[in-house]
Image (tube, rainbow over the protein chains, first blue to last red):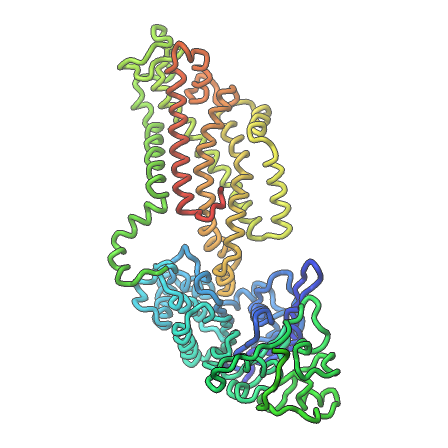
Length: 344
Length: 292
């Protein structure tokens, strides 16, 4: 697996009126070619901020530190003009709400063609032909007669297909999909995810899928990263994460999901609240809600390789402990044991 | 939101015409446009339509009542009121359209720039605009006329200056709305430059309220110009101009009301027409009421 994107200790702070807000803290992550990587976490945990940092579309009040490498190129060192060239070409993005991500005053086809023309020196006819091909590829029926239709003539699912067509117009290497299915109903959601997976196979695009729905991630991702309050706490292949979550937050997240095995029982909730990111706790940000809180949790646990396929940032994990010279926790809870998480 | 595709097919044939009508402002707007087009035609064709020369003095018909050859009667110098009203639309419409276009040419870029860039740029530009807005409109016009001397063109310029801040503010506020839309962010994510986003996405979506405002301002321009001329600050005699004619007729209101009434009606009709267009356009362009 060759690395397409490498994030080294990426932090993002927003300057605000009453001091700064630490939206993302020390995230290190590598995305390989042809990979579909899911980034999960609750609202406000920094998923979108991280993806906007990759796109270079953060507001002026945001300060990004660390290293963002794309094909070995330092994104933070590039000029705005260079980054603009990259957006929509090498890097592309699909947003959450298809109802508003298309301009209501123009035909859908035009907006796909616009993306082509923004990066390729092609004639109007050529860009239109390319746009039509893309619309057909994403499954817009009667693409020709739909080409000039304004977005409001299309259903939400169809609109999201158009957005995806525009995002894929220049065969990007990396597609950031920020909750692409959240605004859609469940059946359409499944169709859009299938399409995303199919396009990924066909074009070999790396996809960074941002979701708060673990079901969505399970459906199409190869690996998953779990974020909590701006920190990346666990990275694992999708099947392994679901089978044996290691970070207490991941475990709590999975237990909050309804499943057939626990029919009839009430779902667990995670007690407590997300910390205030304008004054974040100095150590592990989950510590306040964690049932295994220890003294060492006052220090930020580094994200380390737990084994060859998984990374974790938790002082319960032997690998993390080893970095601080600590012995493994004597009675480390087994992954499958039920854990009481917070007051219910 | 989206109609069933089958239902869509039947609608498609009628759609373009209906769309044009809603775009122009529905039934109301259509009525307004019709009147405006008639008035413009009247202004252009005044030399053909007018039964007499607007400046021809007829000593026998001083303050004469309407007759078949002089349907609107004659004024204090025996000039034909109908002919003068027809010619007067050249000045009134010219100033109404000209001042608004000029104000748009200046105000639109300011509003778009301030709204799109935001931050300090916005703050400073808008405070300057506020400064202009803080003068009473007529006072501003009168002080400009005091400097440049009276005349139709000066009146046009004065009205345009009054309108620049109004235009800039309206455009800015709709740009602020559009700027925050996901499709603008989407266009950025697709690699569009700021300039092409402003041209391609911001302007087309933000222009609606500005057009509504423009049509309403045209109506006001006619009134302001008439007021300035009435005060002797706008067009100068013997130019046939509605406000000037009002001022003339003012002295003979009891003896010869037609000298006053017909120019007054002329003003009322043109103002009504522009307001109808404005209301119609507002309904189709600006359902959120930014121009209100």
